[in-house]
Image (cartoon, rainbow, N blue to C red):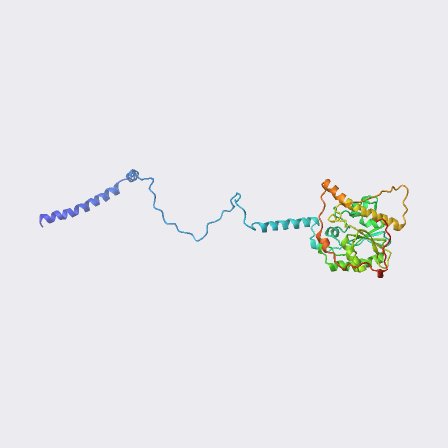
Length: 354
């Protein structure tokens, strides 16, 4: 072996020997040296660590449990919240109805009927169009506190004390006053009646009047008398006015008297004081037919009524007038406009100061 070959062999063995020594020294070095070595290495805090690529989730992000508070700006979309509002109003209306009728539904109240208060030898029979919900529920005539009937009855002197619907059963015996209706069926309003029902009710009313024969048939409202006049007398009264009418009930001596509806929604006379005049004239008619002689203690009063002045007074006193009930007028059937015929054997009575 030459010297050159030995030197080459030694040169190859030196790096391998050096690597083995370094590995042994590293294994024998204590852990503290490694920690100090790591601490001695300078690490830049601003160097960004490599980020792992994020995996997109197929599910949408979860919504917050409670919506964020705060009023949205801008005009709401058309129709937004309308359905909720209508549902809330319907629920409130249903609750008010249940409270009004003590838990009974409108259908249950409509199934009830209001019995007539009628007997023989009555001075007057008050005729309404049909029972309302409150009347059917209470089983009383004119129970609505806004109705002017009981107030006008007292103010005109037809009763000597202020009464209400709880006294309706006592009126035939005490004052000779009875109650009935053109149509027996209970409805929320008069607009719920058909013209056919009202026409048929006119013939049923005729049978009652012929059976009980009161002195005066008092029609509480123009609509029902127009229908009765057309169905029974075959004519439509022309220029119909309130007060005593020129027809008697066939086969009886019962006269017909027309007064404005006692409902506060009456368009002609919206206030109670506007209607007292017709109750006063009704009392005078009753006394005249019964031959009642006035005593000297009764002081004569020239009673005049001016509707225009009454309405002006109402405006000055800031009294709100009730609006007209369109459904009431719609129930009236319009017939022919012929004049009364003598074939019925009925002649207009003399003017009795009505």
